[in-house]
Length: 260
Image (tube, rainbow, N blue to C red):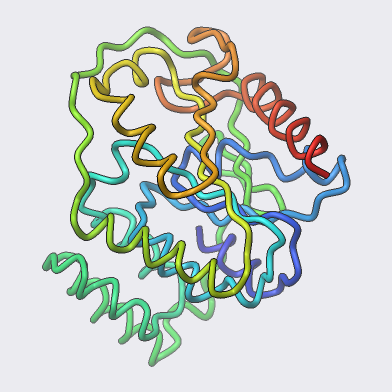
């Protein structure tokens, strides 16, 4: 994430901006889009929720000036507290008023303490000499924000059933993010990336989730649009391996080319 946020500061005027969690930064291979003539940047982050997507939109949307934004939506992100992802952003980027707004919205002591310590580190340039290795623990950072993982295959896993329910803070942040894009005349697509059948079927009211997302604008649930194999195309219940990424991105690019 440190490398991604360092790189984004040097970017401008992209065709497509990706926002979302690890489903995003592990799901959209910037190299595949570049091969088709699209300049993209993947601004995904671990466990990113709409609260963090809003912060990144406020901080980088005008600079990146995208033609189109892919906003990841999934049931779990809308019900999460956003604490984990807030710590990630505070630790790896320079903190500002948007970080303060995020900490206030979340209202968790961990986030508030991390923000306070992050401001101290920024003030005294404690991150100045830090360098993140591009390859670590089987992950490779790819220019443009994508993270490629060593090839592996998923094993079956039981996932507890749950019902989708909006968190008040997540819903408010999501709607504010979309309003900012509308105000800046930036087109966006709401995308539910593919997950394994176990992960997808764990949400018992997915039809309700779909209807909510459709009400906000153009929405595609790729779990309904693409045939993937849980064992061959994923490395765990939620994340595509490189074979799955290639299949998914191929379909996305084909859809983009039709519109183009």
